[in-house]
Image (tube, rainbow, N blue to C red; front, side, top):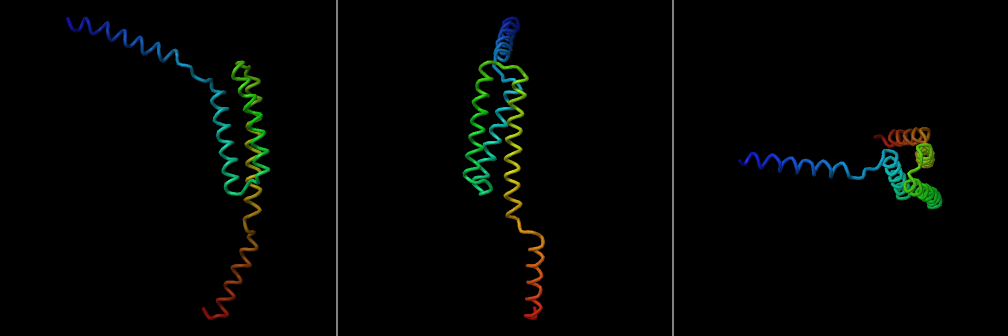
Length: 134
């Protein structure tokens, strides 16, 4: 008797669970990818500003560009734009990410001491050690 009551109850619960999962709104891949890229780009800008690799002017320029892309993203998301438009947005995000990477690489390369300078410094230490008898 208990098994007869338990079976329909489990079927109803299973159907409720399945319909709840099916009705959940999930973002399409291109929307999720775009959001992730925007977050990563914003973190790169913040980190570059904290470390001094980016000047405040550079970071403001990058943030302005990112804000423009976010505005276009919101319009596309509301309109459910075509995949071509989403690909264009992805391209703009990729270009901005690469531009930030280049700006970060330029400043770290400039700040890094040249190998010739390191050799001269090391040679001076050796000469000082030799002269002092160490």
